[in-house]
Length: 233
Image 1 (cartoon, rainbow, N blue to C red):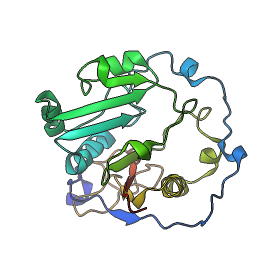
Image 2 (cartoon, rainbow, N blue to C red):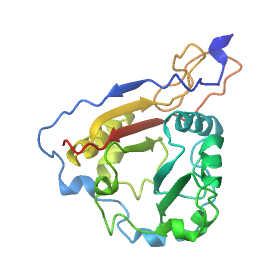
Image 3 (cartoon, rainbow, N blue to C red):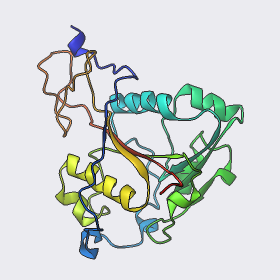
Image 4 (cartoon, rainbow, N blue to C red):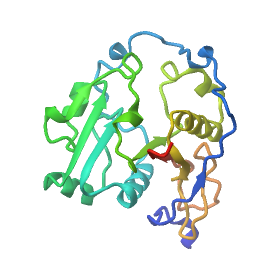
């Protein structure tokens, strides 16, 4: 039956506009406290050559990237690691030097293994919690920011409020960040597993809700919160 397929066509990633809830910044400093406030460079000193989402989620993310990433110009890969999951067409554009990919991460050994970076001039080790920058200021007008969210995280390193929220509330939390930072056209894109008719097959925790012997009991959920820079704002 088509409803048991794990393949999500690349044109079936539904997006909904983020709806602002607050007119003023609503969060307190305590919302951003962390269980482990120690230097992040210590925590991330050891290379973690693992993937934090399952293979079906990786394939969906790659399929989504294939629909939105440019084949020329520049990409900034924030919080990057040893793999970026770009589609073959993007990798080919990098190889042809038609597209440049730059990265910021916390582990040099991981970034050295990432084929998206031509050489070490294209990435930098930087703790953005210690040395924050206005990301939007570095984007050209019309440039997009894509932030993908999964249920996995390092609980001791995320901010306190993150651990208090549901998955949908976390997406709104990210939307708040982008809105108050001056980004436009903020949208939440659902990359969770779907059948061939475009229907979700999991809940927000990744538990498969469709009764089928062809499906596993769990498929990692995934979302993207995207926004556009506009000089009109």
